[in-house]
Length: 156
Image (cartoon, one colour):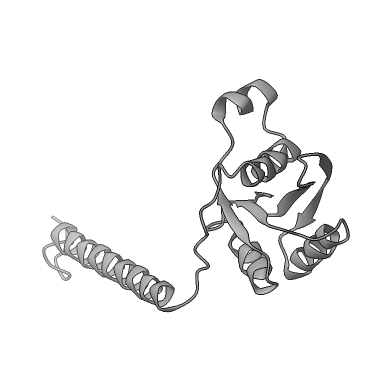
């Protein structure tokens, strides 16, 4: 699957390597459910190759994993191939499927759940709070440096 902010483009490839069909779905829970139903309507789903499992494809990755589908992290397609053919979503979706079928892609995605994800969320939140506190302190210091000498002083 080729994932984006608003849509995911999925492609179905048979175990023989024959390309069957492709379709675009919204990035909503209903879209994820429809995508899975569509894929299953073409036969047994052996694996799903998803580009961007830790960004735009994170929700879809969790949805498919919860449904018992093996999800494989797929890197972006070859830049040379993308330059030659442009960047149509069907091409990227089929490239993801081909990468899984040929076993060029075999990495299990991070699901964004569990203790490691909880610690990462706390660390990210704390880092943002420290950055904001530092920026606020710098603004206050700047105001003190540039403030008039006396609030009651009158002009010449």
